[in-house]
Length: 251
Length: 136
Image (cartoon, rainbow over all chains, first blue to last red; front, top):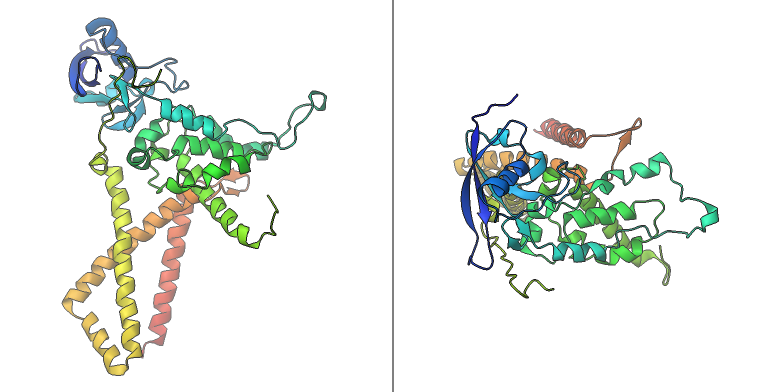
């Protein structure tokens, strides 16, 4: 059902590096229908009001992870947040917190991409199988050990939610540490030792202060705070085992 | 191309005042702050132990100080703080545990929190009952 006369004021954070010293808010009056997402509101602005507005988007169905933004101060995906829920008030849209702003709502993701590669986010087989030996098999129970953590879409909302990352960008951060756990917890994987050199460090799980807001904002219920904090236990056990393990022993 | 070259001029917004941005952060800081008051109460109890080691008169003096209106008020405040601290502790507990399965289904995190809080309440009641039993 649509109501033809509804409009909403969208305050959008603008930053055009070639002419603005710092970001500022620009307000747009946007007519909308009940099924319009915030992303559709931005597309209306770009198509009909101001073609200079920049933002990232792709799939419109919460799977590509491109349209993460601060909506009224909360990190959300623009495509699955609806304008009707903010109607009768203003709606404020900003670039994701804690990342440098490239232009308007577009952030610089270089730091995230570089850290993502660092945790080796791929299977490192425990025992390499030849093609004729067939697939790497896994039971449903073994799949369940990591499935939840494998649904991350790299949208970076958890980074915008994490004050630890905001205060110290050296911290690897929630999403990537959750992915690290995803591979470590996979029965087919044997790369834990390679990943945990970073995982055990202050840049790794110990950089987390268990604010746990990352898990609140995650659109895929990955629960990064759980992935990170259960690794603190594993990290502490590894630390103390060093003292009782015979010299030269591994695993 | 690096972020500094050409026309690129990435702007990093300051993080000062981050905790005011969301009520979630204020609750988090309140939770962290409770541990300061808990440390304070530990010091009060340790001081009692010290007074006990100094003899009966010293210990009775400490007990008397604890009964002053200011001290009773502090204890009421500390009781509330301990309650919130315990709750927040059990609220974060499921985040520190691997998934627990019961009869084939994953135990939801709020259930783990409620079990923890219930265990804390039962243990505290047992301690209070035990203390009531040894009162002269």
